[in-house]
Image (cartoon, rainbow, N blue to C red; front, side, top):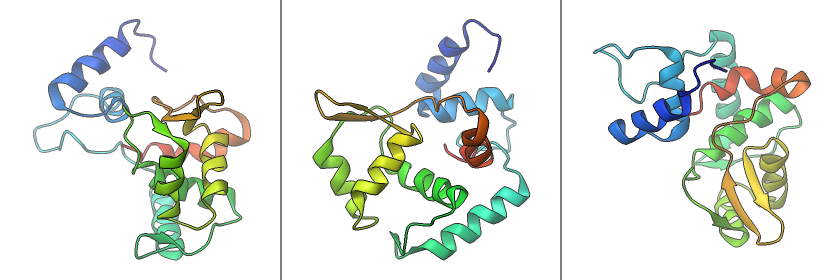
Length: 157
């Protein structure tokens, strides 16, 4: 995390000027100045090994936009959860029914996908109202969760 006290303000300024979501604007600011030949929506660079793993995982587990199966390996699951998370708007509050509908489009076991998204803190939930929203910015990771997610969360825009 940056030591700059007004970093969140800078991110919000960038969001309003570029139309990026919070995560994209934050990543771009952390990456440094955007050169003229780069897109405003460019993702931070990913480790080539992690990128190869991500590509292989998506090719193996996704067919026609749906999950073929839910992987047992946690790193592969993280890749798929992040891919699913792209379908959610970071500025929207969802009802559980809407979340379930979106996740059913990926796999029949939508309840497991929903639990995993919450367990990894990609989605937050208010148990009293049944409302869900994208955790933006992504949570700070440590320990085994940091090892599972670090290389792949940089790819999330």
